[in-house]
Structures are given as C-alpha cells and as structure tokens.
Length: 284
Image (cartoon, rainbow, N blue to C red):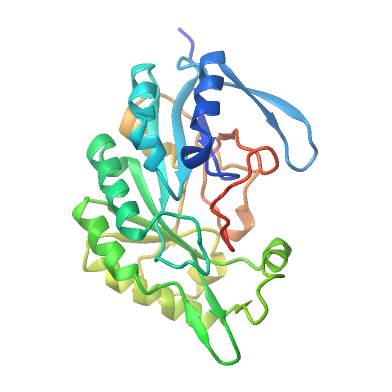
C-alpha cells in the first residue's frame, strides 16, 4: 500500500483559471502533469495531475460562470478528483473590478456551487476591503453590498467568510497611473479593527464565521469577545474531513506566514505572465 500523502493543486492564486483557462487546465489534466514556472526564479517544476496523486483541486475565481456552464466540475469528479472552491464575491464596484459579472450573477454562481458540491466545500472570500479617494475629500469603500452578499451566502448555507485589507503593492500604483485623482487609502489599525468587528457582527446574525487572510496585526488588536481567527484558504485539515485520505498539514512556507497566513501545503499551477487575468481589477 502506498502511504505517501496525496497533494492539493491550487488553481490558482496567480490568475483566474475557472473564468479564463479551463480548456488549458483540462488539457494538462489529460496529460497527467503541469509544468510550472516559479515566478521568482523562473525554474520549471513538474506537478503531477493524475487522480491517484491529487487529493483535491482548489479553484480560486471571481467568476465561476464558465466553469459551471461547461460542466468542468462534473468532468473532474468523474475522473476521480475532489473539488474545493475559493470564491471571491465583492460588492459591485466598476472602479475596482470593472470586468467581473454583475453581483446577481455571481450570487447565482455561489448558490450553484453550494448546491452541486455542498456549502462546506466553498469559501466565500470578501477580499480585499478597500478604502479609496476619487477626488479631494471623497472617501469611499467597497463594503456597500456586504450585508446583501452575507444574506444570500447564508441562504446557500455558507458558514465561512474570509477577508483582508488591501495591500499597497507597487503594482497597484502602476495600475492607477491612468486614473488621476484616484488614490487608495491605508486606514489606521483602529479603523481596521472597527471594520472587522462590524463585519463580524453582521455575519453573526447569519451564522457565518469571519476569518482574516494575512492580517496578524488586526487579529492581535481585536478585543477579547471577538471570535475572528486567521484563515486557511487551503485548508488541508478540512479537505481530509470532507474527503478522507491523507494530506500534509504543514503550513505552506511559500506564503506569508509572518503575516498570519494559515494555508497548508499545495502546488499552485497558475502563471501571472503566461495567463493574464482579464478582469482588470485594480486590486487583488
């Protein structure tokens, strides 16, 4: 008997494969492997993709419409793969996410995923929380639809929401070069804490727990009654609970552990360069 733990494929933190690259993904599945270029050192590694080597495929997306419409999930299940979903559903906001489908479509996709695969196999990500100015003194955020999304997620029996605050990377400044007057604001820690507590309160009414992605400072600053915890977007312990089998429970050292990332080991098979994301989001 082979006691070697199977692997988890992450598809993908680096691009939106369910929205744009499922034909390519299925072709690699048929080949039995992925060739992955490390974005930092350009080294190529081979990731096995056969069902006897892969425990679960974790899909990340802001638009699962093409994935659902073409029945890719059913095809993969017939081949013997387990599936898990990280679905980012944010407020309708063309300033930040100009090319994602309207919110009502995305909420329909969320409901479809939960019906087909079970709500425990779906993480709802409201990510990232953004504060920004579109002109002098005009402060905005992207929280306007949060309560609506939470209510619809609760109807689909979603039990987890993952969130974080926008990280001010240099690439974001480059994206805004053509938007004079548009500027992201990094709020003080106290405002972040108040925002998280308000979100937690709204979710508690829907029996949804709130977790944070790489927000160690915020977690440490929360008052004692808060039940907000660090998230694990690749939750190998939950995947074993859902699908049995054996997986590594080591944390993924390639992620932001010092910032509080709780993801377990996985193999990400996407590419920033070769698979550009056409959502054209200002963040994420």
